[in-house]
Amino acid sequence: MTTYTSSWLCPSNIALVKYWGKRPEQLPMNPSLSFSLKKARTRTTVNLGPSNLRRLEFLFEGKESPFVARIEKYLDKLSIELPWINDFSFEISSENTFPHSTGIASSASAFGALALCLADLDRQISDSEPEGDKFLQAASRLARMGSGSAARSVYGGFAWWGKSAVLKGSTDCYAIPVSEQIHKSYFSLCDAVLLVDSKKKQVSSSAGHELLSSHPYRESRISQANQTIEKLYELMQADRNRMAFIDLVEQEALSLHALMMTSTPSFLLLKPGSLEIIEKIRDFRQQTGLPVGFTIDAGPNIHLLYWQEDQEAVRAFIRAELLYHTESGAWLDDRVGDGPVKL
Ligand code: DP6
Image 1: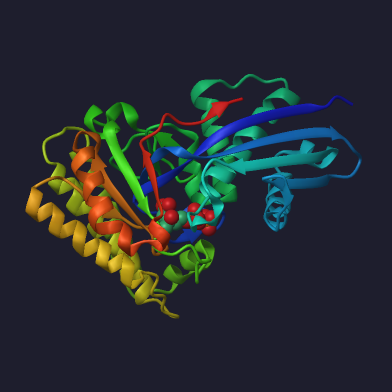
Image 2 (image 1 turned 135 degrees about the vertical axis):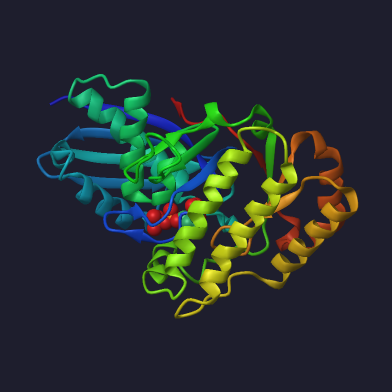
């Protein structure tokens, strides 16, 4: 039996409208919109060798990792539709291009990279040639089965995941690229990730999504997220109102945290440092008139969003006012990226 190999570098992404809440099998409660990052990426290589029994060896940055259990479950799930998975031994090695002790979620880039390898191996083994759109759709679908947000990571620029009446071709099954519809000025958005606390999250994303199922604000959240994504998408097709963009993105991020605070059980993930940074960003915006804002995932770290043309002023502001509130002055300097690369 032949051996096969595939290797991909896949970015993480940051959601402007968040995926929060899911239905089986990893289908989102609401559509989400994100951009891929340029620097925060995962490099993964999958080597398949002949074997009667599936075996899995997984090394993360050269060492054994507990993530192996999640990959094992993932391969189990996928083997129903990709039965060749059971006919090989898997050697998977993976590394991140960003420090993993930072508390930055890497499941999007991790499952994005792994899914791209699997979709690539599938076309090698089945001798089929889905190219371009079809290949990336297949990879996005596989990525979604591992981690919802990973569905959006297989594209560069901006991606949309989840069915919506306002976007033709949108589906809950996989993400689609929307870069062509987004105004070019948004491609110079930068993301300064301010690391407030690198400790492990109190609530895993999966447990967090679960909290929405019985949440008293569930229906309002779903309708609010739909309205927000529609407004944001419309705004981003032109470069007329950056402040309105910033306002919507901040409101969306704080809605996610409001949901967590009012869930049962309740989770307060923002730290005093997160709140200090939020207030300072808002003061800075008011004083300078620059379109600078933030988004936040399910954790305490603040993603400061700004346009590249304002970089000098924003960096001086980060150094002078914000780093003090981070964990040992730590931040990641990232921006909109071009998407995955086959190695
Ligand atoms: C707050 O994709 O990590 O980052 O599907 O359970 O793996 P699972 O969840 P995950 O959730 C991401 C939640 C979020 C928002 C987002 O990225 O859209």
